[in-house]
Length: 197
Ligand code: AMP
Image 1: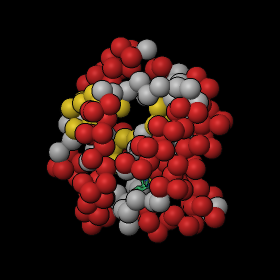
Image 2: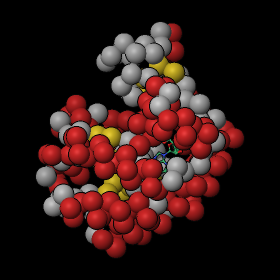
Image 3: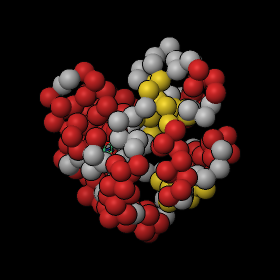
Image 4: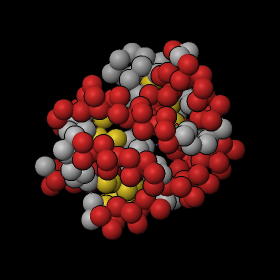
């Protein structure tokens, strides 16, 4: 949605890793077990992915979705941005309850082609699970499962939660209530992007 509205390229290590796995690359195969069970992939691998992506797409602004997820990743990002002579404008923190997360992942459908995300509760897509943007298949993710969610939440609480204080201290953190519908959340995110431009 951000790319469509603002023309800013967005990347997510999770999406890159899912693609690598589908393609059967060494990286995809090496990380498949960790992602399937909800663990975090090593900082070294994730930072290399981000650096490679930035070399190709990072010329005129960018958004990372799901990165950084640990303090060492945040520190690496800071060094990368210094090298690119680009400040970090904004760190958006989506506040969601565990109940919201559980409901969303248990009904999430994602396009294997472009990453478009919708839900099984959207009757239209439940009947014909095809992406409206690229005609790719809409599928369930193999880590969208109640047991795996427990591990993902443990990883989040132990390693990702400290980033809120980190970016609060840096003055770049903005909180958005993510428990609302897609349009309300996107409207707040859009406003933050416009204000920081
Ligand atoms: P996501 O698509 O953001 O939910 O990520 C799916 C999975 O990819 C995560 O559960 C992790 O296994 C891995 N992953 C994605 N982003 C990161 C990251 N920044 N650091 C470590 N692992 C990640």
